[in-house]
Length: 340
Image (cartoon, rainbow, N blue to C red; front, top):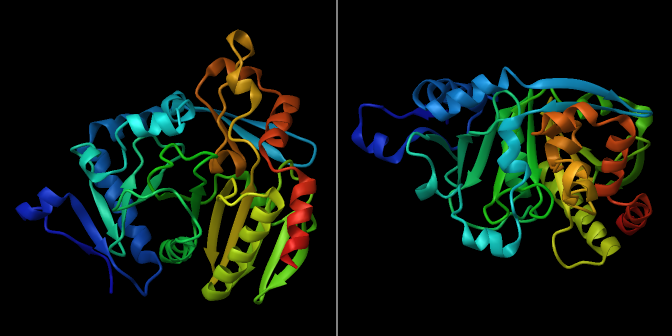
């Protein structure tokens, strides 16, 4: 079944604001094409989104070369609200959820995805063609029960896309509402790093899925690679349980996830975390640096909404930030032992 565009002249379609419906498609290009169609329509009909994409043209970037890896630094003032969002339990309870349908902007439309999610144009894009995929129900951000959807989304979007997940305590600005993100590939430094075989060590084979960890890439990574979704779900569950055991928690371990799909194979990158924000985020006065690492940052694009921070961030500070928020290597080694 292919995606279908609803008739814009139909009043019920206008009322629902459903741009298209996707409930399974044999052609990998189908969903991707309709996402770009949605974005094109929304940039014409929704002034806030149009302005946000115009602002992207003024974003400043520079490469920060480090010893064993590189980071792309972005100055994007449009990300100030997201970067400084208060995500404490009380803060979340007291603000309206911006991903619930009744709180969406009147101009916002979506693609209904597999009857459970809405594919939305992100009104505060980090990069070009930035989408948010939110559950139609208000439910907490939690990956274990929806990892199958994450894999489906990767395959439905097809090659040329990166699918993203922020854990509820390490990057999600809406930890109370389940959602993913998606972007076209070609922008994240991690994409080049994944092609460097010498930087990854095979540590386990779980249900036929290869499990690797990164070596000297500035932050910890666990990579799952395989072509069977059922086996990937089993391997992911084992890795997740191993992380929980090593950290000694019953909660979802802090983790960001990036996924790629190509040639009927999935590649899933986990970035295990130990802190949401670095200490410099909480300093006062000139000592404060506003960076709030989520999955985009862990994938190598470090976004700051402050031009002064963009200008002064150097290699030593960037390396320190990544070491501070990434899971300690000794804990990951312990988790690897638990996987076997």
